[in-house]
Image (cartoon, one colour):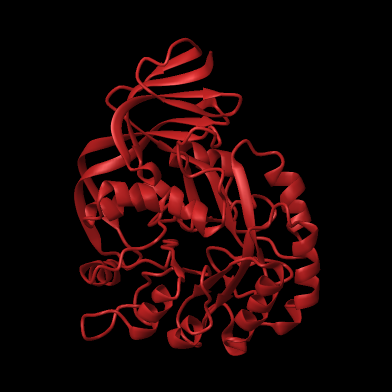
Length: 375
């Protein structure tokens, strides 16, 4: 007997190549079966006319609520964004990940896994009216300390985060990234690299990224954009993808532009992962949440299956999680119930450019650990 069965939904699971009307059964916290007429369950939910997808994974969030200035409440955010796993993109550093773990991660219902920021205090100076880049002062970066804390929290930390650019590393340039890569290499973990306006220039960052490392804000507006002036894709970006660098959207307040996105996609360069970069100053727009960000890519013409893949199995693979991202029996019992709402929607990028659409993804329910959690 199943604990829960979602009955009659359109199951879209790109990792398995499934797009069909099926029931999904959950038992003992895991996906137990996919099929028709699965039989008895302690709880049945009719999800006919809606989509059932693997639990959404937002690869770039900031959910150290109360411990950093930019954090948002993880459970509140998960409920309206349809997410079952939130990857925190370096809100905490070696000096405060202990508090993040005890006071937020261990108390939340939603699953949270962090990148450890190479900077000791994490992202501590981002707010509406100020922005102090944590990598702009090398006194805040210590590779030995970061490595020791990453080892201490090895059961939790999924990678090392560094922010470089004029607004985040300033005069220190590429040095924080070099330090972060050294720690990531010692841990055998991926690096997530943030790049904003120069310095450093994009090509200096791209040449350092290794196979499995993640470039977030990958469709950022000019300058340091990946879109070339001749209408193509910058060579260093193509070379990075060829060697296995992962390209993540990380929308945020200033890091996603339609002009870049259209040019990249016209050249066949789709993002590997779609993520929101939700935080205090982006949750009210233009990013809003994971589903709005995914809806923008539907409006840009990205196929539905690829949009779902970019928020499920590809996101799981980026941080080497093999227990989620699909509804394959035996995986974690996480699922998101979605509706393709019809209407008139206007989606904005960080430059204020609008994109009109007649479709928007909306959350209609969340299964977490095999139990109906929200909806």
